[in-house]
Length: 86
Image (cartoon, rainbow, N blue to C red; front, side, top):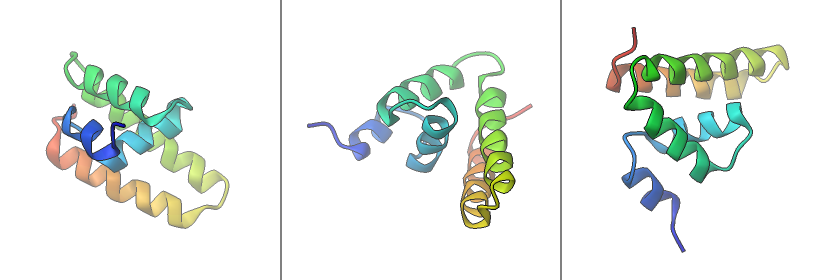
């Protein structure tokens, strides 16, 4: 069976970034990993992933889930540090 560590190793994303994409798109993590990695290799793809994470933060704040919003904020900061976002 393929593990999350294996999936992360096949992409240019970290586990928390994959989880944020999965949350945003309402898809399994393996599909989110494939989508996120695909986007990172497209023009403006990193910006799209950035938008997804920001939208997840807004949704968490909208349902008063401060701890999850804070966790996503850390994910966003890490993503912006490692990927060029316009």
